[in-house]
Length: 358
Ligand SMILES: *Cc1c(COP(=O)(O)O)cnc(C)c1O
Image (cartoon, rainbow, N blue to C red; front, top):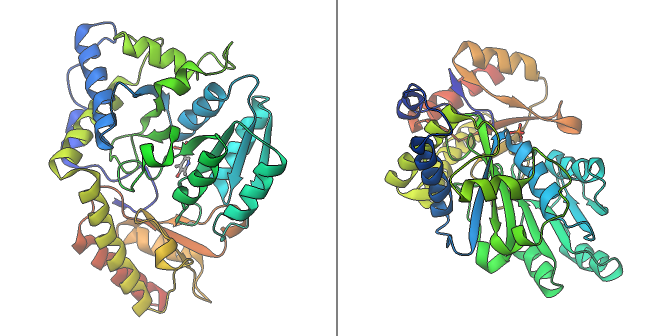
């Protein structure tokens, strides 16, 4: 079965094999070596300077890292603006509300680009210390224009917190140029690891300015980072998920790093787009607004999602429905994981056959 849903991904045999490594206690030096290698490997994906940035590894899914980032890094006297053009932006606003973080929300239609002029106007009226934004909004496959958002933040000294859960490892993130204070991501999307480990990459300066006292014990990214920096871990880590992530990071580096991965995703996404276009199935967004990671397509009239899903599953492919208000209208296809060009050609042929009533 090939997973074309946006995470978890189809594993390579090599990463799957890492799950069978010998059992390991997290209070032993071998674990410290593993944890250190993973933390260094994550900084290495974007060539980040360890003197400036650090990593907090957390057991959990991507949402754990996003929640840890927001709950930890917005100080008690800070104020947050959440940009929202999809499910994951909306989720960040919910996280802020649950933790009692003073926040505003700037909503957009789910198929719209972020409105940077409106953002500047809001910041003019209502100053904030931090801004939270989703890099790749997986709801629609839109790659938000963080360069433009960052420029507005920079001009006003607003710290940028990024949900990079479905972009880290493939899409460009200009940490220095955009002035990213922190980003949250996970092992099991563009990095091709297994679920169970998520992480926050943060400027040391942002960690030092974090909320005190912490708003959360378990999701305190500062606490995880401090213990990990000293070679330990505050609570039981997802050891096997770290085995897999270490192997996945090696594989990524050997394949040429994130730029090579981005090129590969672009190639696969192009095969799907062309194949589906030939069958009369159009993308939701113009190609220049899309990530290379996930693309959303409008379901053709008369094609029912459940029937398409089940027909594809019988042929060995798992696709993904739309979420929330897009649930009945779109289908999403990811390029992440151990997937070949031949797989994507077979997939496009299967969709064409099913969409034509075959
Ligand atoms: C997948 C995803 C998340 C987190 O989802 P989990 O199910 O918690 O892993 C958060 N933000 C974005 C943009 C995502 O794509």
